[in-house]
Image 1: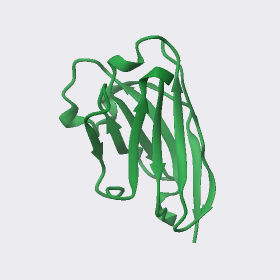
Image 2: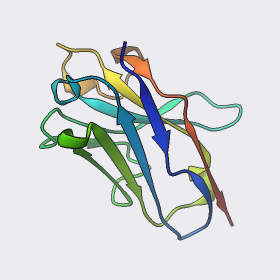
Image 3: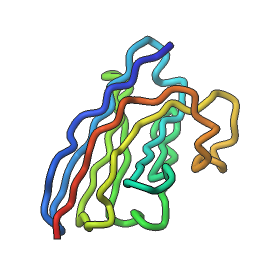
Length: 127
């Protein structure tokens, strides 16, 4: 069982930036697509971004495209989410997750395609 630990959340004003990190345990990190999801109070958990095993393929929800950038450092077993031009509607708990192997990344946004989740980090954007 891999452990995923998110960090980097906090309180920021609208228009500001944050960089989230997700550190993974284990030695097979580079074998998995990794995803970022978020959940706002009273709402369903939704997909934000994902990145393929080598980092060559990235995927974004329409709501964050052009503002967020997902990246990874396989040597450090870490995936990042750079969030720029933050909006109050980005306020949520952000989770990283490891995608099940063998699935088409075309469906990267489906929660049921991920088997390991971090504990989440709170991001609050004030207006």
